[in-house]
Length: 349
Ligand code: F6P
Image (spheres, protein in one colour):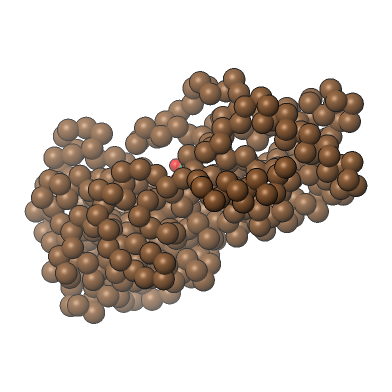
C-alpha cells in the first residue's frame, strides 16, 4: 500500500501530531507513507516527500505543518478537477488522507464521489466543522488569545482604557466566545448574532455601567466575522474557495471609533484602542489537548484506510473516536447556538 497525506487550508497547532499519528500507524501496517507538499497544490504538481519514522520523530510538539499548506482548490476549474482525480493512478497512490477544514475535506469528498479512496481528518482553529465535538487547533488558539487578553487587561487598566480585541474564527464565534468568557471580557460579539444599532448601544451602556461600578477598564472581544450595521455589504477580497478575507473588514478598528465617539457623546468618553490578534494565534506549540486529539484522529484515519472506510472523516464524539460521512461533515458549519447563547447572556446584561 502507498498512502498519501496532505494538509490543506489555514495551518494550526495539531497538524504535526496528526501527521505523526497517521504515519506511525501506517508504517506499523507496513505501508509506504508519502507526504504531499502544500495541500492540493502539491497533489496537483506531484510534489511528494517520504514520511518515515525519522521524519515524524519529534514533530508532535511543533506548530504549523511540516508538509506546508495552501488554499489551492482543484475543483475551481474543470481541468484541475480531472487532474486531481487522475493523480491517484499517475502517482500510484492507493489511498489519500486529507487533513483540513471544510474546504480541504470538501475536495476529498468530491474525489471520493469520483470513485477515489479518500479519508478525512478534521482540523481548524475555528472549531466550526460539523460532526466532531472539537477540532484540533482550537484549544491552542484559544490559549494564545487568553494569554494576549490577560496582557491587554494590564495595559488597559493602567491607562483606564477600553481595548477591543479581534480574533479569527470566520463565520463561527467559538474562538471569541471561549476567549471572551475565559479572558473576562466585558462584552463579546460573535457572527451568529450580528449586532444591530440597539445591540451596540446596549454594549456601550454596559461599558459605562461597569465604569460607574468602579471598574476602571474594559475589554471587548469581537470575532472577525461580525459585520457592524452599515458594513454588511462592504466588499473584501476572497480566497481560492470563495471565502471573504474577513480581517480586511477591520471590525475591531471600526468598533474602537464607535465606542470612543459614543461614550464621548454620552458625556463620559472612554479612550479606546483596538488590536487584531490575527495569525499570531495560529502559531506556536500545540496544547496537550491538541497533541492528543491530533494524534488520535491521525491514527484513526490510518485505521479507516485499513478498514476501507472511504469517504469518511475521523471525529471526536464525547471521549470516543468515530468515523462519520464526509458528506455530513462538510455540509454545514457548526455554529454557536442554543445554551451557548444563554451562557453569553449571563455575562453581558
Ligand atoms: O479558517 C482558519 C482561519 O484562520 C480563519 O479563522 C481566518 O478567517 C482564515 O483562516 C484566514 O486565512 P488566511 O490564513 O488564508 O489568511
